Image (cartoon, rainbow, N blue to C red; front, side, top):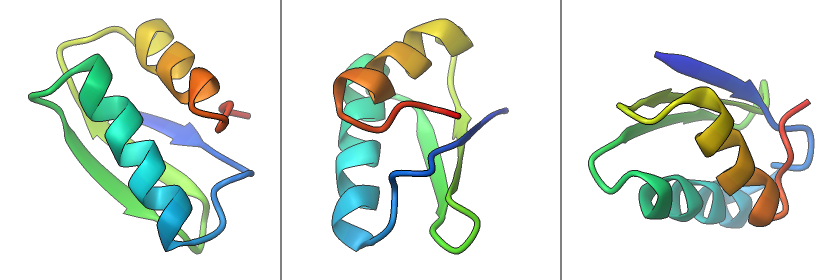
Length: 63
């Protein structure tokens, strides 16, 4: 499982966009979001760099 800290993810709308970006990168991934800690955990066959790039393109660059 991969984990990313996303300081720009602050609300439910942000969480939806993060999930959508990750699902575009890997449609079969499982996404677990904790808004309070601004962390997202991803179960995916994609590598961390690919998922980080997808998050960055969506406007939520990992810290």
